[in-house]
Length: 165
Image (cartoon, rainbow, N blue to C red; front, side):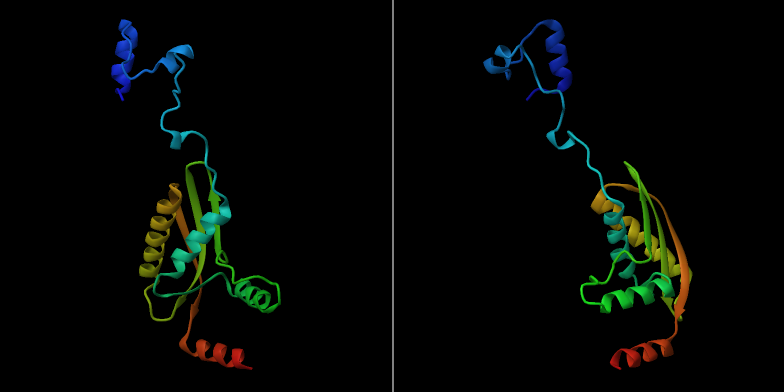
């Protein structure tokens, strides 16, 4: 296949492209100028898709206990126990605004007691940006993190006891 610049030069000089078939000539020399077939058309990505990717990436970071505020986690736990209430929501605590080429994210996290909140927030940002950009091709312009709670070790024991009852 000839390079586009060579093709333009040969067309300007009146030369015919040896790769051009008689079929193309019969069709009046019509050629697809759309470029790579993979770039023809538009791909849109829903906010919920980006929220799921970001939620899973944030949960993978050590020191993140949960996503969402205490109230949203309580409602989510109730909804999870109701038959037909759906699976645990991976988007809880994540809000995405998706444009055509960029996205911005807001995350609400609960960190474990004893970890550096600044380090956890930095790691969450890095993990979320990497995952979202790799999977969607969107540019992540910002990841805002709100730390809504700190999970204390004794709170975990109380939670386990209440689940057993």
